[in-house]
Image (cartoon, rainbow over all chains, first blue to last red; front, side):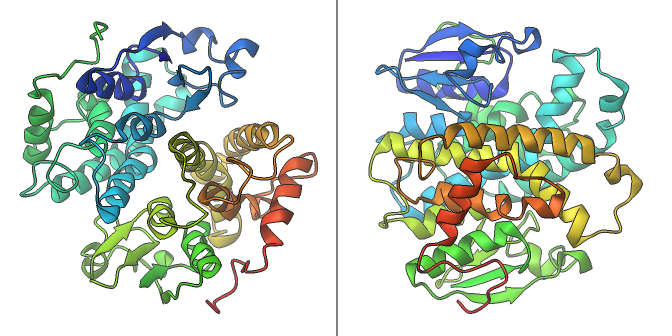
Length: 203
Length: 203
């Protein structure tokens, strides 16, 4: 399988991390979204929405959306639970991540460290991103109380989806000092013997 | 099952519509988010994120996120396909809806018709919502070319997720005049013999 990706994107890190945990090989093809490489006619033929990551399957079909890739790769593994309600809860946290978490925590990081020549219209949004991003962290902190992982107390793709940008939240000037449950959970994820970092390309 | 909901929310309409298509009964409990009813201690005990819809299962457990509810209710029915890649594609469109569609098309509608006393900071965002909302409609229009439904040419929960706010896009001053594939698809969904409208409470 081939992953069209940006190395420092949390969304692109998600399928890389899961693939490594599962011992799957992914060929990495770097796409520089800052240079418009995800908006060329060639790329839009792979993904109409012009986004990374985009996964090319071995039969030449394409899959978009990082969390749909996690679902696809996790089938038949312990990262996707057996129970129907647990599966729905995994998806609940993945939709939470894309709707209530990523648009604030990842976006603040993007304009802070990936594209720091932030236009004034974006700079004015940092207070809103921090308010809503901290609200998402509050939800996570409360939920993790007494738990090792987000669903069923085993490592699932819900954890991978939320780990991707939470462990880089400080890049967006979020302070995790008052979130001990989150910090313990982040350390637990990073301690997995087959863990790789966002910077790692050796998959 | 009991659905904590707002009648005119597209996200709350999703599980109502699927439940009716499947002949499932849902007890509706109205929660007025404009009056802060989703932020009370009592409600936060049901859903830490303080959002509608929230689904209470018959055993007293709760499930959040409209698209996770669609997944849960659709198990074992034709609205959730059998094939793994088709399932991933259904989820791809559901994540697309929550990330690239709802934050613009639903939010423009919200400030236009649900809470029209829109603060100036929100009013200034309509051009961005329209630009990004039309980009989402462009993706849908291209994808639907030659197709009856979003995945595998059968009616799935991807269609329900996208129908919920697309069929109300005009409430946010989106013009669907130049989107014939979308208009035909909307008409196809509404023509299902067990279809109910967003206004219908008789489920």
